[in-house]
Length: 353
Image 1 (cartoon, one colour):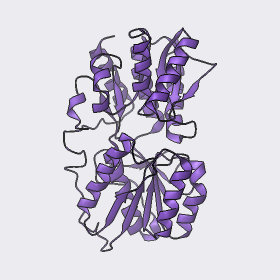
Image 2: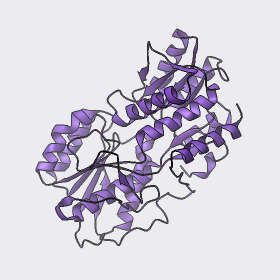
Image 3: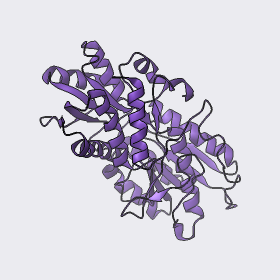
Image 4: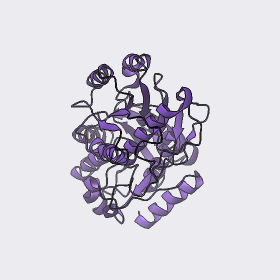
């Protein structure tokens, strides 16, 4: 497989989907955006708390960069990130419970398990706290949810990368961080649907069509290694969590299957430079979590300012990829942007994180 062919195919897929790739630079992606005045035009000193899935995952450490940038741009506000020590829905609910007790003005959440948070988020809403989410399209007790892109389209895009690597034929399966993660499963579903429509010579592994990495690189590695030993005809694994493709690539390399088995998925640039350079993974995709953190805080501020807390599309959240957000088809709650990027060995050093 030639790298140039992959990237060209990926870019063609994006154009076909009518989405625009955003570019990152060596400075935080929020830099240069047209941020509102320090008080957001409201004159009120809001307290906005962002609750990620956990506080140590590099993805959410990067998200905090955007949250801190939002605080810098809105000095009259108190804006901060506070997450559980590990990816655990019960711990995340406790963090939210503590924030309710502190009577913050708004809470932005990246839910571990939307269903497990419904009760505590309803408590927040009943207490008059604005609640918004990210990667929580199925969340009921939220005012608005923001997605960096259409989830089905993103899954289709990952599938295009995997199909290119696999030569558009062979047996594959899908991996998600958790089977309760709404976005990961929507990406995987979108990828499978796209495969069935566009790549008839590829086939989903019926015995294990979806496996779980628990958002952990070691688990992704162990699960992938077991899959490849159990199903010697398996040729591809589509990842969703930022830990999936790197863990899968490690298993492929260890079993001596590089060039025979392939993976594609989401991943952080700097952390995955080596597997891109050595060809273990031809391309990864992601959206900058710093931008998502900034956008979630700005969405909370706009909802706080809006009459009856109602906003109308298009919504400008003042960061690239989130400046013309529109409601997902059939929804008045889920907002979609165009914030994904492609990472290859040729541009991996350009992102700054």
